[in-house]
Amino acid sequence: MAGAGLRAAAWRWLLCGGQGGPRAASSSCPGCGPPGPGAHCPGAPRSAPAGSTEVNSHLWSRYQDMRRLVHDLLPPEVCSLLNPAAIYANNEISLRDVEVYGFDYDYTLAQYADILHPEIFSAARDILIEHYKYPEGIRKYDYNPNFAIRGLHYDIQKSLLMKIDAFHYVQLGTAYRGLQPVPDEEVIDLYGGTQHIPLYQMSGFYGKGPSIKQFMDIFSLPEMALLSCVVDYFLGHSLEFDQAHLYKDVTDAIRDVHVKGLMYQWIEQDMEKYILRGDETFAVLNRLVTHGKQLFLITNSPFSFVDKGMRHMVGPDWRQLFDVVIVQADKPSFFTDRRKPFRKLDEKGSLQWDRITRLEKGKIYRQGNLFDFLRLTEWRGPRVLYFGDHLYSDLADLMLRHGWRTGAIIPELEREIRIINTEQYMHSLTWQQALTGLLERMQTYQDAESRQVLAAWMKERQELRCITKALFNAQFGSIFRTFHNPTYFSRRLVRFSDLYMASLSCLLNYRVDFTFYPRRTPLQHEAPLWMDQLCTGCMKTPFLGDMAHIR
Image (tube, rainbow, N blue to C red; front, side, top):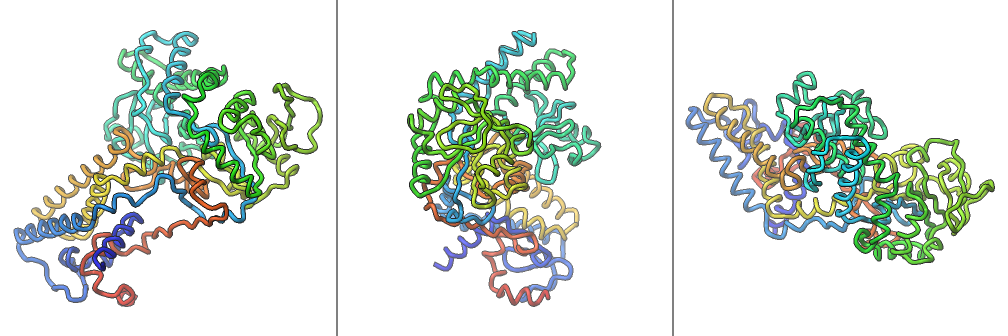
């Protein structure tokens, strides 16, 4: 039982990202390697192996010890730790305190099937050819659902699609021009000898910098695919082009698919095909109303489209569930522009001319602004919880400027958690972490043979990173991590959402008065040991006593 508990504790530490500090680096406990200069681990030998051959053998011996330890550390049941249907908390929040629930429509109340993406891609591709007079050869490209992931950045002037971490560094091996990877050396050269993207070039508050755009919503997946295909065609046929013009044309073609109502028509013609989990959406809304919660809807989609979708999911009386319904809100300017007044729509969706002095249940309103919304409803602060899929357009202003609680809908989360729960991922990541800890502690050996051993370990570590990355996406990996660091997307997710989940239906797994507590993940100075050290003799010394020795 004690061994199982120790293994579980070590695995929890791994998931929290346990790091090696100065104390760990000088340890000589079993599994930690021989002491470096100045080591003072209780009970440790005071001298390292003398000859280089002996050091070499010692390093590989520690390596094999780690391999056996990692193998024994992960029992089969460890591969089902995470629940894809769970809600994850960035900030403590009690649903007991939430009186008002707000929702976006697309990809929040209405979840769409992935088969929508190739249709958006094909329609925009044809618009480029027929209306923007792009080469007919572009028509040979089909949508590849496995190419891009959400949260990538696009450098317009360099035609570079890439993944950036929370510290503004490009993850090497994830930069593409067209459909071809760009060598790491070229990426570094393009940015003046560094992987770092300066803050002034990066995305602004809404994901748009002066020359770099971040693709944040799910509808951007076909946009990234089309952009990459068009660039690939122009480069492959040695055609000169202006990067800014090409980017704008592709973006406008994608926009036309929405503005011209093509996407709305496809969905309306076959809702069973395109809309997922409609019965679960109804269950969530009905449950909240039954428990006395007030509901509102703010969406950029037009009323006729929303009405048909809600009738499909909820029924003809869907508006009776909502206290306020606002369509064509023009987010994110809805949250910042005070000038646009609310307009009432009649039953046919036609605009009315009367002045809006209150927002009535069962009625439909268009446009408006958040400031009038707050004045008319008096729904303010943390008693309001709003759900949306776009971190910038839906959530950022509400959390930072108005103090609402926010919930992010991240459909990709379900698939990523299922991958994390696989035995291949668990073993790969655990050994990667153990090997990294070994590299940190053994770097004090700098003779020629030791450097060769460390280089071999470093190469293996990089191979493990690439294997782990490819489990999620061959080109760009996980939307949440760049090898080790969080992605820029993850940084925004943590900053702009109190809760995040794969779908709104996850709420059905919790009571309406449930309190979500974020896990206390350790800061670097709070995690003095690497994961593998928790399972070795390092644990034999009481932790507090060890810390007292440092003090």
